[in-house]
Every structure is written in C-alpha cells, then in structure tokens.
Length: 343
View (tube, rainbow, N blue to C red):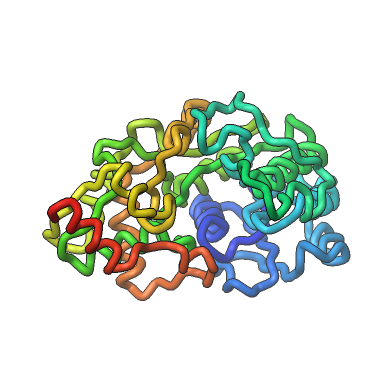
C-alpha cells in the first residue's frame, strides 16, 4: 500500500505516518518542513499547499493508493479543492480529517452522522462565514470552513472514493492544544484540585493513535462515507480522567468537585480554564457507532493519560501553537472557588 500524507510531522499526521510504517506501507509526506521532520523511512516532499505549482510538482511524485489529509485545519475550502483536484488522477482514495464543528448542531445538540452539516461551498475562500463585529449569535465560521473543505474533497474524488472523518477532542502524546497536558501538570503540582462539574459526566475524547489507525483503515477500504470519530458514549468520565492524571503523576491529591452553576457564577471560561469542561448538551453526546462498526477501536482513556505523561516526562515538546496558552485556571481563581466550596 502506497500512501501520501499531507502533513505528517506532528500529532495526528505523525501518528498516521507511524501507523502506516508499522503496517509496512510505503509512505510519502508533503509539508513545508516548518513543524519538524517526518519519521525515518518516509519519503519527504517539500512544498506549500497554498502554491499551485508545488501541488503540481507533488502530483508528479505519484501515484498513490490513497491520500490522507491531516493538515487542512487552517486552509480555506478552495485551497483544499485545489490540492484534491491536482491529486485526483494520481491517487485512488482521499481521506479528509475534518471535525464535529462542521455540524450545525455542535455543541448544543446530540449528533449523529445524519445530523445537518453547515453550509460551506467547496470553492469558498477564507472569508466565507466570517461574522460582523456586532454579531451575538453562534459563531459557525470555523465549522463552515470545514464543511466546505469536506465538500471540496468529495467534489474532487467523488463519494465512493472520499472518506470524511469528524473527530471531536483528540488527546495523546504530542498534543499541541494543551488540554490533557494542563491537567497532568496540575495533578503533578498536587494539593487540593478544583474539578469541574459532575464527576460521573460521560466524556468522549479519542486517542490520536486510534484516530490514525482508523484513518489508515479508511484509506485501505473500497467504501467511502462520513464518520464521527469519538470514543463511544459512556467510554470514560471526568472522574476517570482526573483520577488517571493523579495516578500517572503519582500524586495523592484531593479532588473537590464544583457544580456547573458554581463555576458559571465565578465566570470560569468553559472549555479552556478547566479544560474539557463544558455545559452544552451536545459536547459529549456524539454517536460514533458508524465508525465503530467500520473498525474504530478506542483504548482506555487511562492508557492515553499515562502515555501522554510519559511523553511529557521524557521531554516531549508539542509544536508551538497559540491555543496552548488559552488553557488553565489561575491559582488565585482556583483557590477562591475552592474556598467557596469549603475545600
């Protein structure tokens, strides 16, 4: 099996490359070389996806059995379309890594693969979906961009040859967003720890390596389609996540659980100040039975936590990303809320 990975040097792209090499596949990786180098054994092709000439040169290195697109998070739909069109004649299949943000109902409603996808033309530019400064409704800009990129993939390759993967939260070694690393470092610090919401709350993060393996399975499949790529509902809980962080770091700290209304009263920013905490009804209610039936397997969350801690302790450094700085509550604010709770 010969595949081309668009990206391939960090987090999900790197996990895809490593998984493919582990299967004995021939792997090419196309990227600018800014965020690192691909693992040994990969055919490295340098270039910029925004430059049409680089895309044409890339196509000359084909053919491939499949393309796995892991590096389109910042691209407009028309840029995804340009690359897919150049590669269509030299690749058998196209696997596009999208996001659950492409759904109109995210994060307020439970989702299935038949839920409504946002509008977003396949040829939209980067300004499509931007909101006026005085807009006070839902911000669907990113989701519209990803929905358009999905349509670009299907327009170029056709429904039978294109697979769309819509992950929710991806965790694991190499994470660049900073959610799980923040909780691990907070656990390492010890003391009384402010824990968000209901400890029994079901959550659905998926390990980066499990997403990679599923993407490789779709690349090898003769069937297209769209899949929600999350852990099964009920697979893990917030309590399980934080307990695993304490176990991984060897701490015997006490978790004090703050109800949602207390956190909201204190103005705690959802999703960032206490990472992975959010009150919206659809955040952790994503049906991924289609992906599970197609072969998605999700390891225990405790294994993801332990392996991420091992990576951090070994000096692992994520690719620099502005979202990392968004995560974490200040010690003063945490102490204030704990005092309110008698902790």
